[in-house]
Amino acid sequence: MANSSTQQHLAIEDIRNDLVILRNGNVALVMECTALNFDLLSESEQDGRITAFAGLMNSLTFPIQIVIHTQRTDVTKYIEKLRSIQSRHTSVALKRQIEIYIKFIKNLTINNEVLDKRFFIVIPALLGAVQRPSFIQSIFGKQKEVSIDIDKILTKAQLELYPKRDHMLRQIKKMGLAIKQLNTDDLIRLYYSMYDPDKVGYNRLSITKQDFTASMVTPMKEEATDSAEPYQEGNSS
Image (cartoon, rainbow, N blue to C red; front, side):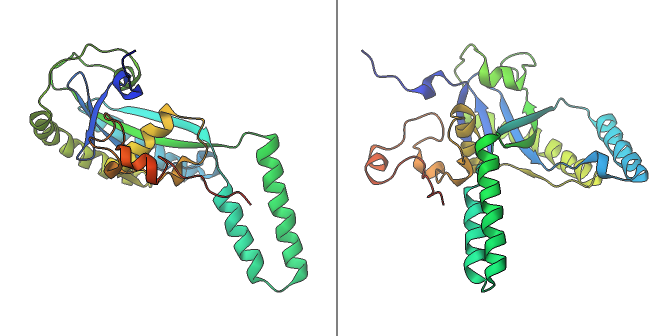
């Protein structure tokens, strides 16, 4: 039986220079954006955000995709922080209240699935390999592979994507939200969590590009399996 890797079945060719390179020759830039509770805003603030969002939509001359990624939340670090605070206090009553709160958090996560939502804006560079593909379809669907020159594609994609990225940064900040472009290590962790969603607490993953010979598409170096696991599990309190 021939050896096979899961990465051979992904539509991602590489993650390089903070960009996602697909096997069909297209490239995508991924940005993460904060959110706000619209219902908590005053009427005038709501009107201002709506106007700013309308200005963003009217200013677009290129395609974008808004992606909402939902995942289970790991509260281990939060509980560890509470334990640390508890140990520094001398008040018995306060220690008892913190212990009650910790038990409440643990029971909440046992009896209910606590979810976290992350918001992304994807800007594709449509370089002509295929006609206007959906980014999600490109990532999760089957695409016909073509021979691509990654260095050449990256140079062309950067010229196309960076002005669009800067435009989105300006428009999103007008809405009072924070936004940033995901770098190479951020993208690796993001896709790792998407393709292995049962791993709770992926934010504590220590994997970086240095753990791979070519980002996402080749197996981890053999020596890494002897010295460290691909991810590190924390100790639950």
